[in-house]
Structures are given as structure tokens and as C-alpha cells.
Image 1: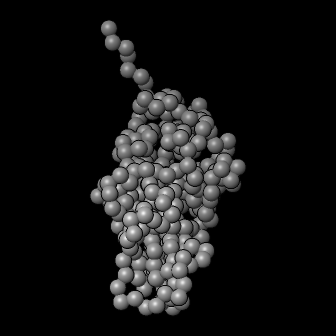
Image 2 (image 1 turned 90 degrees about the vertical axis):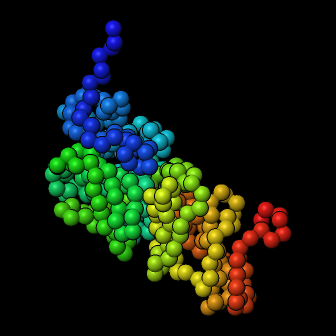
Image 3 (image 1 turned 180 degrees about the horizontal axis):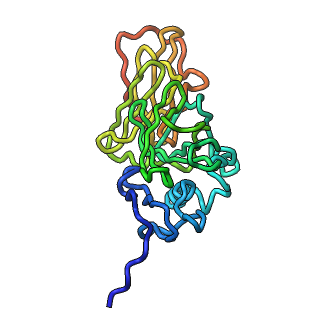
Length: 275
């Protein structure tokens, strides 16, 4: 005799369909405490499958956070970010967005009854930020924002407060097991495409390109960095890749000064010392 199947809320999106197959199930409003085989993390008994619940369940699964966020409403995640050991970026001053980050909406979010809303970044493609969300007005588990000049916008939304990132989230780096990536400048923005078929992307603003640049693991942390030459002050500088898949900006000081104008340059371990 087989055991009866576990009752489940209606699944709108399987976890394998987002976040490079590492997401969690997204369910429609229900009083069933299971979303497929995944048990709720927080929520309220009248509908366990709130937007905050989705973020909590994902962050618990990934090992970025334990338990609930300790907030009553979604908009409070932005206020409590530092107390949870997370960092935040105000909308209008966003310099990087990575898969797994949370986008926090204010209490004026339509249909939220003052609770706000939280969505989770799935991937970034150019200026389009694709997200997954739970407990939406139309039960659509996916959505998009436009990112321009450090500002996220979305049709029909209320105030977008900003983004929240957990430092334990190295999903982009961890998922990058497919060899070389692609990086390029567009104006003062440095883009990086990583992962299988370059489906995972990130960007960092305010990084002016040099007159020459190359790729190397300058600080031996297992992540490729960008080394560049600036003719304006004849310096070699390094842009370090961080654990979130973005770039940390120019080194505080140039690694070499007084470099004349080269006619050719490259990066390699010329003396075989692994440095």
C-alpha cells in the first residue's frame, strides 16, 4: 500500500526553472503548508505563500540566512538589512545587482495593503533585471525591471526602495564552473557574463576603461580580475572581482606608476612563480 501524496499549494513555478536551477518552488495563495515537497518558512495561516516567505525559504535553502527575517512586512527588509548582516543599495544609487538579491518595494505598492513587496533577482540581461516573486495580484511568478543610471523602474509599481544583498550569496561565482567568461565595458559600466551559455550576468558602474586591459587573478582568490593601463597618468591599475560576481572598483593605489606608453601588452606568468 502506498502512502497518500502530500497535499500541496498550487505550484506556479518550479525551483529548477530559475536561479540557474537552484531556486525554490513558487506557489499560489493557499492554506496548505507545503509547496510541493517544500515546507513554508514563515507566512501567515490565511495564506502561507507570501512574498517574504519565498525570500526566506530561498535564503534558508541556500544557507545565506537561518529562519525568518524577523519582519512583519516586506518593505521592512530594507530597514532591517544591516541587522541581518546584509548590505543594501538605495534605488537611484545602485551600482551592482546579482542573482539572488532582493528588490524591496515600499508600503505604497499597489495591492499590498501597506505591506510592500519583495522580489528576487533571477538574472540580469543588459538593462533588464528578471525577477521571481510570490503572492502577486495576477499570480504571475515572474517579472522584469528596467535598470538605468542606477535606478530600477517597473511599470505599475509603487516606490522601489532598493536592493538587499547577503554577503554569503556567492551564487554567481559558485555556478561559474564552465570555464572562461565574457567581460566588456559600455561607457563607464563593466559587464560580466558567466555560467553555462553565459546566462548569468552582472554589472558594475563607475569603472572607466583604460587604454589597455587584460584579465588575471591578481590577488589569488580564484576569481579573475581586470588589470588596465591608463595613459593619462601612466599607471597600471587592478579592478578586483568580488564574491558576488561584481567588481570592487579601482585599487586604492596603482600597482605600478611611471609606465611608458606601450605598443603592445599582455598578462602571463612570465617567471613561473604562480604570481
